[in-house]
Image 1 (cartoon, rainbow, N blue to C red):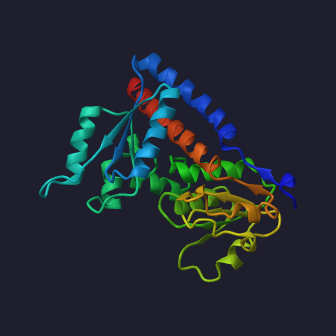
Image 2 (image 1 turned 135 degrees about the horizontal axis):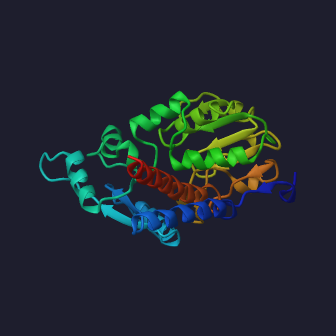
Image 3 (image 1 turned 90 degrees about the vertical axis):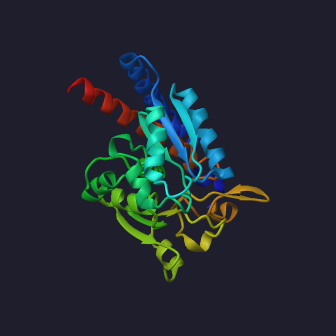
Length: 290
């Protein structure tokens, strides 16, 4: 199958409708509240990658009439609780939603992160209550990267079947995506670093989602002819930014491909802002109806 016969996904085009809906919600918020919605982006690790991602979120927020507060959080001195420390910073910002950047530093555990962000301000679906709702099959916010993959898969409208293999088991991609797909009657295989005979699992699926951060490991031997490949991986190399998929090798075999960059990434950022405005409007309306 030649590249001209494959479908190359365009994340920017896909994101436009999401952004239009988000802009409408932010304008509605302003009309009711008299100010722009405030999104707090907490960065406790302060890596160079986080700074880049943070700037991209702030830039997206500006386009959507959302005020983004990028809060760099150094490790608290002494034995001060990270939860109390960050909660005090958030009280000053009075946000309408919160994002906790990853990776987390050693002084904040995943459990800390789920407790710092209350469910009603949880833009990423990391609060235990929201994770539990996804497990129970209830409608809720799920992590934006998982949600981006979900929406892309749903947009395929069954053309590649309903067997999905996910190569990732994290709480922000693999697990929530698997549960969300099961809730929509997909058959899901979840693989990870300890999976035996990975190729055998991925090559049986009509849709493969990969999020390992291993640059270009997924070549044509991992997929069946005509399969859909959704590449969440992103790695900076000497030749530039690449994904998990060996794009030149699989493009002649896959029927659908999300490129890196320009694929899942733009959709994730748009969904993150849409999720934020969804919870901000809900909280505002709940107060008005109280």
